[in-house]
Image (cartoon, rainbow, N blue to C red; front, top):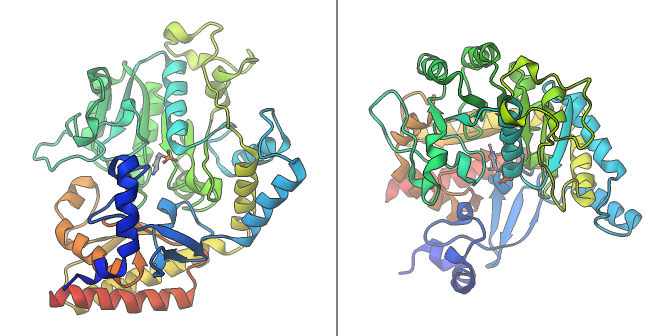
Length: 455
Ligand code: PMP
């Protein structure tokens, strides 16, 4: 007999075949692919996704965490429609009022943001943040952490999907580095997350060459940092004059209105944002200390620029650091972003979603335990992951030692029962994940686990 997943998703299978004829792997982003084929969705609303075979799913992927308000939030949809009606066009290609309106919000909410620039994606935001940091210091090397993702470009496609290792120090290559010129590997230092002793030693060794240290303050959106580790990283980078970049593409507007920096009280020099900020539309933003940000100003203010007494190298003087983009600060995107921020600013929103996540985690763990499975959830706030392991998860190496094979089978069972997770990926919640939705989820989850055990 045909396995139930294949039986239920015949139209997706067909559409996948068709898509594969014109797009490598049938997808426009590798992350969207999974075995045996990705599901094609047709419509969505609230916490639900509906596929091309008429199946309904409770969505825990939420476009990789971007949809903090769920699908089709009425305030966001209204704001977008109004923008199109009022401005008479999606985009002017000139400055406009929404840019300042959203910039002001970011400056108010993020302690590390004094001024900001918009981009079209999280990738562009981290790329600009790194260029600002290396341009400002005049130093070419950067340090990143093992297993941390900052977007798909050469400089950071190093140690994104690492392999299991025995030694203390992470290697610089990984499976994602195919096609990346050696130059980038040679100029990227890889650090182990949550391991201060090793991190400090490596930073000390490269202190005079490093123009930036970048990290996801919460690894992959769900492995929390040791607060002491974050604080020491901040102190050390300040001491060495290396700009510290928080990639808050996942954590921004997720760990609260002020992201990880607000939650942990550790303030970076530069911050990259994306995902939730776009309210479902493509966006990114970079913000930070004014004296660093100012180097990309075509109208540089010399009263701000001090170059911090740093080794300014070649990029000192009057050169302007390049930053541009046809669709940067797109009005439709920013209207959705502003409506999203306004909705998130209402009292109690984060508490409610975090409580829901907490309840879901506890009950999922109980179900796993009832069925004799060795598993736990790992996460912070509104995002968590399910890890089939009995050891604490502090970094990516701990994940690699968990039962990834069983997790994959569980994910297929969950998809079959109408829980949408990208296999192996984290669970994100939204304001649309109400009590009813959680109860339904737990019922489906229990069914999925039961099915897994029976096999
Ligand atoms: N940084 C982090 C931490 C991310 O999670 C992502 C996206 N998953 C990016 C950067 C890249 O963002 P985008 O996909 O919008 O380019």
